[in-house]
Length: 275
Image (cartoon, rainbow, N blue to C red; front, side, top):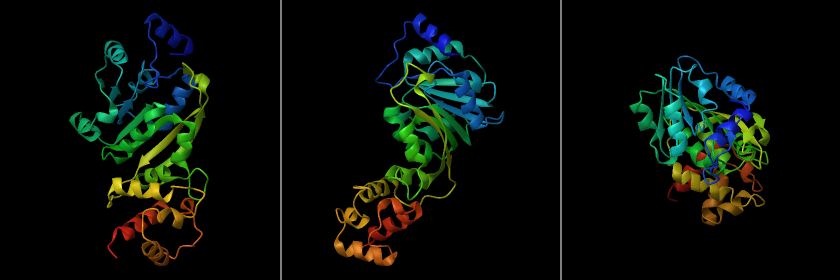
């Protein structure tokens, strides 16, 4: 389905893309194939697609995958998929991915070691990413997000883009920016550029409170212009902060972007102890 065909389909169906749902449909066959190639979809793979829309990528994934499940929030698009994609290895549900227990859903459908392919709405992409990396059933995700979001997810230590979200995602997964996608490859065209990113979930056991460490990271990155110590002093006593710097032999002038994810976990555990 190229751009002309997609525009005609939308026109024929009198379909008005929802701005609220962030509906920008991928129309470039070249980009679709690049995404599928990046995901390296095999005939043994279980695929989860989030927000399939008109099925631009779906139609290429179904013949390649062992089994495929899609989650579509828009009832109009759900009905379209149900009517036009009748395959034994494909099913679609009409639901909000943020309200779905992903691991329960995947277990019920006998999915394991799942690969996710998705063109995510910009406004909720960070929330969806956090759901994907916390899943025990998902092994890798190949997702399209706003370019700036992709850069943050893939940002490395000591770089400008490295922030609290970068650290949090990379505690759970290995990330890699794959390629950028100009806005003219979508119908309607968004005002910003997009990018496709690879997120491979780690097998490591998480032995910390995710919600609390997320809050801790926000404190550490509260003001990027300030030293880490100043940010920490907004939430912890001076004695605790001094003890932390002594314990880990930190440079007094160190900033949040100069610290690795693993060290952040150790720092959080230390500050959580009673002194």
